[in-house]
Length: 280
Image 1 (cartoon, one colour):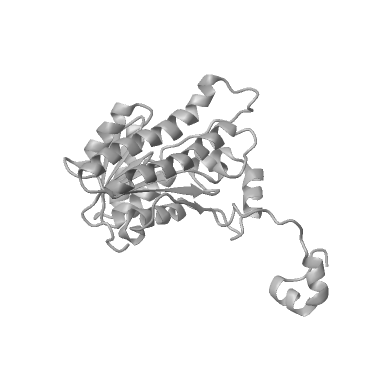
Image 2: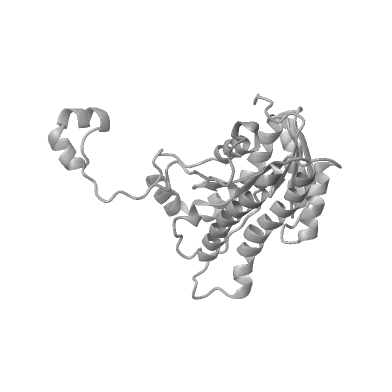
């Protein structure tokens, strides 16, 4: 069981029915928070809540319908999660992508990721912030992406929306800090969610693994642990920061591979620690 770092606290997770949001809800509930998950598909939310509670009867998980592009629904979700009092934690996780070349995207295509990712996050920060301001503070966690730093061909609208979340996070931290509200963000790497597994394709999975220093792809729980850190008092003097949880995927690619030269100078040690040279 997770240490009860969040006992007695309330939390809202947008997009909490699947993938990263679901894992975040589980981690926060295991830490003692009373968690509300929201999203546009009520049946998915209810099934997720039931499954989370069935797996651990001590978890407190509630659901509410919310399309994060509709500000009044975000406000209602915050009020519901706060249950007439303080909202301690808000995880602005709801997000989506929209593939297409910059040469082909129309206004309505741009508005899919900008609406959900950027405006949905802004509305969540706004209404969670208003509640937290009235109740002495809290923690808001946004969900960006490594795509805010590494260009993704034919997903430019998604990358732009995530880069905007980075700046939104920093701006919100600066504005809300005087109210004891911390705002931090996560940049997930290649996470094996249901959606990504179904759409990315084997070639992209292979490429991501080759470029991930820790030699494995991420799981939703990897992100949930970082969210739990930002939600808890363990990070009480941290705000305005973006944490890449990516297994090293955002490392700048090496300028050259000097393995052959290293093997000339340290042949025994290189073979011992890194195995035989390729092709040998």
